[in-house]
Figure 1 (cartoon, rainbow, N blue to C red):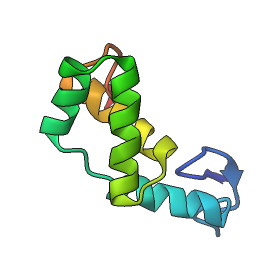
Figure 2: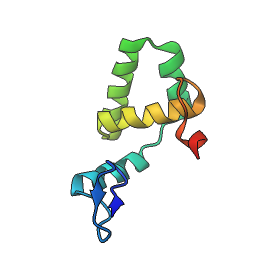
Figure 3: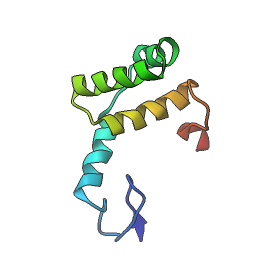
Figure 4: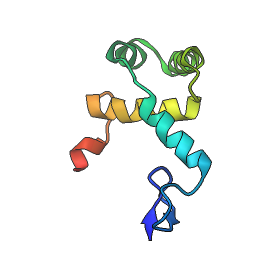
Length: 92
């Protein structure tokens, strides 16, 4: 048995993803790029309310889902030291 790369569910060896939704989410998450100036602006110059508004505007501007964008921003923010927590690249 292998695991779905997006949600982690167990799937048959012949399948790559557990569902079409997981496949679409996985590739959209890879496609999302967060510019460092945007990240700096939302974590240094914005409070929580402003940050949420900026993220929603950014998602609409680029036609990305807000939940996937927030996930990607959190990953990149951990890598760049804006929020605490072990970054995914540090675990390897």
